Image (cartoon, rainbow, N blue to C red; front, side, top):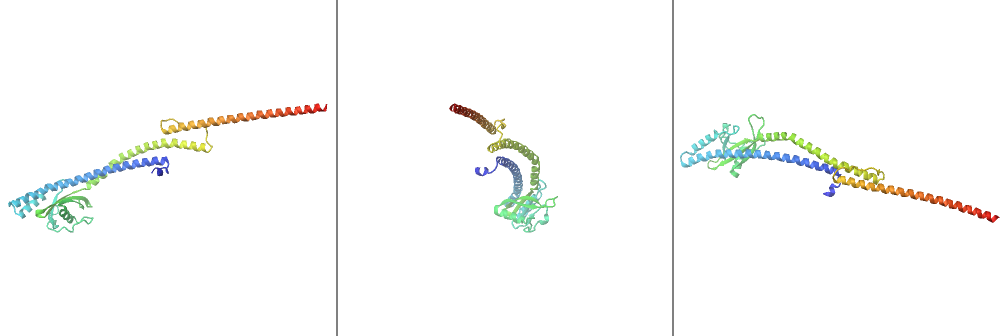
Length: 308
């Protein structure tokens, strides 16, 4: 992994860290909101189950009277259905009863369904609702079924969850449903309310991160430029890097400045030595010329002496 990252510049790696942090922040925010949505849906499920369990006790009550001989089966069933038919809760929510043969026993809102076979009733997704209710009860005795169902005031069917529970002695299924479209609405509203806060946090985080990146990349770029110029023989040895700060880049600048100072001193010393050597060679050349002149003069004198 380290080898792969070395193929990218330090600045790009720092930007990738910022991008990763921003992505993580967004993911955590959405995860939290989604968790809230799941909790709200779970509350809907539990509320539906609780009301069905409460109404279910009426079936048990009238069945006990039937078993004790106080009521006939027909009368007990009729009284139980009537009692449940009158119950309302929440936003005018209700209960219905169908049997294991997928026939409606009691529906308080659509009494025209009573006695009819419901096996062909489906939602827009072609889910056979009452067939699914019977399947759920036969397989698990009770459970939840999600589907779409017309809601008063809306043109399109809305999502709904029902809890159904079977009553074996009469082969009845008691159920009730709660619309869950308000959960989605609240979820969207929560996202909208979080957006300004999230944008503010992202802007603050982004600006702070960019400042950090600039504080690293800018002095590092200057150091690399200076080193590159010196390596190519184009650098000005009198230039120095800024060394105000208390981080590793400052230490690098200080070390660089010390290194350049040593090079500058070495160059100066070399220049001085070269100048001294040149001056010494000039002096030797002058002495050699003087010696040559003296030698020539001596030769001339000797020749004059021989002629005499």
